[in-house]
Length: 205
Image 1 (cartoon, one colour):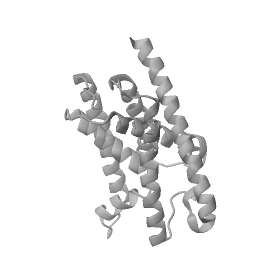
Image 2 (cartoon, one colour):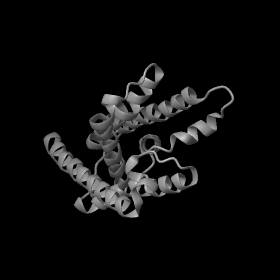
Image 3 (cartoon, rainbow, N blue to C red):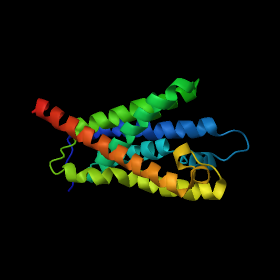
């Protein structure tokens, strides 16, 4: 099913989308030093799930802002992915990560502002009449695609962005266990978002 979004909702989506893609452009500029290629540095950002989620979220928001229909399951999956990006960063990484200057700003956008505004927009503006508990498996689509990419990229370059995907160190057995646990985590977070959405929509009704 496709949802219709109000004019106010499209305007909000446009702001979120421009911030997301603008932040990616800014991070690419920061990472580009003399003698390096902006395009290569942009591509290197996609080694990280955070960038995948922010980029996809930004594109989805601009698509909606343009008045184009979008799958409710896709926005649900993106809301779940961005929620997990924010939670994992602030729970496990923020204490040991101290960016400065423009990196501080892009980091704030990637891990706090964009996830928060995307999820808030999703909860308030998107009329998900056909989004039910049976939609929960869809939240695993993005992590599955990213995992396939990460394993192929890691096998080619030796770089694994996350320790729980480091196949040479873990072996297939532990990697598969990690993926099962990660999938369950995504489904659980999706269930939480659906429950909170139901409460919010009830209060706004």
